[in-house]
Length: 352
Image (spheres, rainbow, N blue to C red):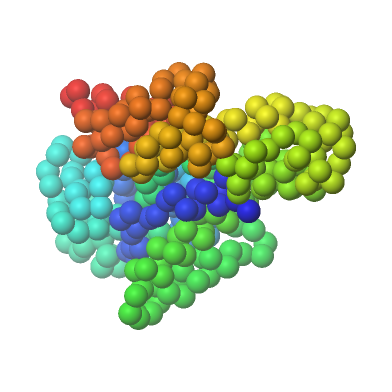
């Protein structure tokens, strides 16, 4: 059985995940301009403020987790309003605000120069509070994962729960030791932390979780969604789904519409097209082969449904996903609201 969060985990992997332990001498401030679609931030100790461009500062306290959506820049600092001391362009490039290269070819998330007029480095500053910042950058691709991004705000802060977070416990333990394969372990733990954080966020009252997430908890509709997600190629009907869900056709259709805001067949079509879009973007399978994988009898049937839903033909979608703008990023942007913002950002950057 499958669902959108499981698919997200399949589709993403931390890229340039940084685990930095530094004693920052206040005032410190890092501006991140790397145009990645999703970043995970957490503090194992110390506190910080995260300020998106044009937005208000949000506190990041120890063991809180923050999900930051791109591509817009944001700043992590010791206090709101602290001017950036460094600009982080990616895992191997860092500059001063005026463009001077400070660190090259190395992770630099945790590096910060000491305040002007002092001799010690930031990491050796006496009396500085130890700040342990964890930052994971994710390359999220595809239409299915785009559904998750579209359900998130610019910044989603998940406060530490009363029971703590097992994933963070394991990350803290792993950081205190050196063992073979450590980076692989840390990357997988970041995967776990991301999905657990998304779960926690969607359960918060202020999250306004999307219908597809809320409905997964319903015994009847949740089972139908898992069947659709897990086997979109099957010739599903409303009656067939109702039987699998243990309900009459009329009761099932009404319940589905009440929870999801659309009919079962409309959702099935939407899911099939999302899966087809991802297969077209990521594989060399023919349109005919893709059509059979997502439940259409032939390429023509898929093309008609694809054009009606996406506004372009399957071949056009594939070409756009692999077009010249891709030289700037190795992931397709997706087709939702956040995907459009990412595509616009990349096109502007290519033109500039």
